[in-house]
Figure 1 (cartoon, protein in one colour):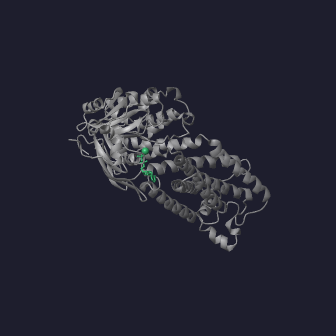
Figure 2 (figure 1 turned 180 degrees about the vertical axis):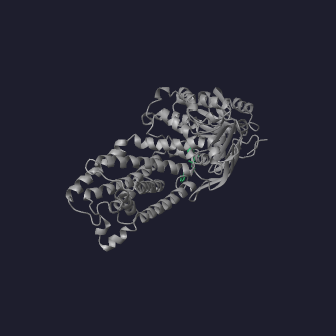
Figure 3 (figure 1 turned 90 degrees about the vertical axis):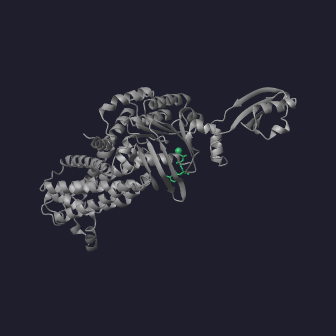
Length: 313
Length: 256
Ligand SMILES: Nc1ncnc2c1ncn2[C@@H]1O[C@H](COP(=O)(O)OP(=O)(O)O)[C@@H](O)[C@H]1O
Ligand SMILES: [Mg+2]
C-alpha cells in the first residue's frame, strides 16, 4: 500500500446476516485520519456487529473493511496492529491482575518492555494506579471498564473504536473518559465513538453516522446534521392557567403540568408571530424558554423514517 | 524477537501461566488419582504375570499405561478447558482481536498442553519410582510416542473447545469419549488376554497404540510392532490437526 494518506477506516458494502436476520444491509462509509467520529443508532441497529467485523471478531457475510489501507482479512496482522477496540461487554480474564493483563495484551501485539512506561501512564490517567496489582476478579464494574480501555490502547494504535464506553458508568468516570478521549484525539489518534448519549456525541464528534436497522440513515458533519432540522422549540407557561389560542394548538409538541412546548418551523412559524397571537388573545406569559434542536430530535425523526434525508435548503 | 514471534510467545506464556497458577488442580490431582489406581490394582492383581510379557510384573506393566492414560486426559483437558473458559467469560475477544494467526493459536495451545503433559508424566514417574523403577529401553520411541500422543489430544481439545458452547459440552465429551476410550485401551491388561472381538476392536482405537507404543519405549516389547503404533499415532495427529487448523483458519464457530 503506497497510498500517501489512506483513510483511517474504509467500510465497503458490508453485509452481515444471522440466519434470516440481516444485521447489516450493505454499509459503506469512510472515516478520515484524525477524525473524532460518532457512530449512533438505536439498540439493535448493528453498531456492535459492524465494530466486531472491523475488529476481526466476526466475519462479514460480504463486503470489505480496511484499516489505514490494510484489509482486515487479507492483511489482518497489520490491520489489527493499527486498531484498538473497547468492546461493549464488560469482559475480563479472572486469572490475572491488572498490570499483568495489560502487559500480556501488549505482548499479543508484539510490544514488550518498551511500552511498560506507557502502561503506567495509562494506569495513572485512568485512576487505576491503586489497582495495579489487584486481581481482575476483584474490580468493580467501573474499574473493569477502565482496564478494558487501557487494554485497547496498550499498543498505541492510531485508530481507536469505543463501543458505548460511557454506558452505565458514573458521572466521574464519564468525565475521566471524556478528557482521556479528547487527549487521545488531540495527539492525532482517530477516535470512533459509539454512544447512546446524544449530547455526548454532539459535544465530542465532528462527524456522525446514524445507523438504523443495518442501514446508514445519515452521514455528515455534526453541525450540518443539526442544521438539517428546520425547527426551534418554544416552551411556554401561561399566567393564570390560560389556554392556548386555537391558531397555535397545531404546533404543540408536548404538554405537561401547564407547560407547553411548541415545535416551530423556522420559516413558517416565526417566534414573533407566536407572541403576537398570544397578545391578541389577551394571554400573559409567565415563563418562556427556547431550545435549539439537538441530535436527539434529529435522531428521532430519522429513525422514525418520516424525515427527509435531503438537507434543508 | 520479531513482533509476530512476541505475539506467539506471549500467547504461549499466558497458556502456561493459566495451568501453572492452579498446579494443585492441573498436576497434583491427576498424579494422586493415578497413584490410587496403582495401589488398588497392583494390590488386587499382585503376583499375576502378564500374557506375552516375559519377566514383567503386573505393576511394571501397569505404570506406563497409567502415565499415558493420564497424559491423554490432561492434554485434552488443558486446551479444551482453556478455550471454553475464555469463551464463557467472553475474554476470548482479547486474543481474537489480536494480530495472532491460526498457527500461533494452534502452536501456543498445543505446546502449553505438551508442557503440562511433561510435568504430569514426570511427576507420576518420579512418585511411582519408589515402588516400581522402570527401564527406558527405547528412548527415541518413547519420546516420539509421548509427543505425538499428547499433541494429538491437545489438538482434539482445541476442536472440542471450538465446538462447545458451555462447560457441559466439554464434560460430556470427556466423560463419554475421552475417559472410556483411554480406559479401555489396554492400560490394565494386555489385549492378548481379550476375547477375539475386543482384541480386533482394540486395533481400531488410536488410544490403544498410544499406550502400547509408550510401553514399548520402556520395555522394548509391546502388543504390536512399534512402527505400526507410530503410524497410527502420527496419522491421528495429522488428521486431528488438519481439522483444528481448518477451524482456526476459517474462524469456524469462533468468528461468527
Ligand atoms: N451473534 C449473534 N447472533 C444472532 N443475532 C445477533 C448476533 N449478534 C447480534 N445479533 C443481532 O443483530 C442485530 C444488531 O445487533 P448489534 O450489532 O448488537 O446492535 P447495536 O450494537 O447497534 O445495539 C440485533 O438484532 C441483534 O439481535
Ligand atoms: Mg451494541
